[in-house]
Length: 326
Image (cartoon, rainbow, N blue to C red; front, side, top):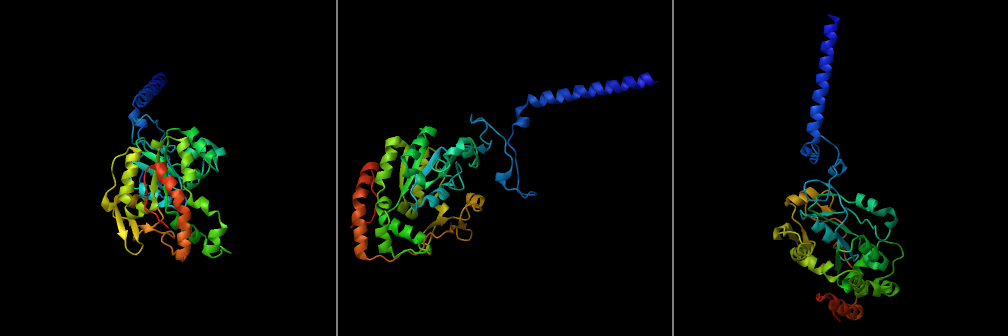
């Protein structure tokens, strides 16, 4: 009797081991069982999507739904106070674009942290999406541009510029809350204003480091007046589908520029990371702040200084912008 019970017990153990081996063999031979992307929902969890552990995957494109942090294929490298945030915020609405949530400043200030660190700062993206990072200071240094070229010689670069006569007062208004700021005329003559007016000296260096077809120069005034046309230019430049439509942008009479259409589904997905007023879809920062009063004589002086630099820029990039003239 004892022998029979022992025999039955051993038989059950052998059967259990056989079943376990069959299950493991089936699992390992079926990649769809363990390589499928993790699905998550905000319902029933306090964790945000970016906090969820995502699976790793290759860049082979076999699974376009597989999400992971990827290094940027496009950088917005300049200029400050020229609408770089507005540009990247609008681009974030495109389903084929993923944008870093802040200026990473990797190639100029954090280069010693390495590419692995840089990649970790990027949001998850699918293999068919393009990650874009914005740091306006990248354009100011030849060393930084050389580092970018060494990292990826075929990377796409976007530069956005603004009428220098308008940009200077904007820079001043940005600093007006600081202590001991002189009046605008005194400030204008005390700062190195030619650096802020002369885009040519910086963009010409970019053209020496990178091929022309990898560089797109945009105009802030056009972004304000006709954001759809600027988005179309970027879509063509990046080789992605035309996803933007006219009704994605709504002109705000009070602000005097275009804001997001809050009913657009993509806006609702990203509204928690964009610095916008949910009710209006307009940027919640000081965009639209009152600029200092400038005398006509000083405006003419500023325009006269800027014009020679502007002409050099227009000749370099092969197009003109409707900027202030003397």
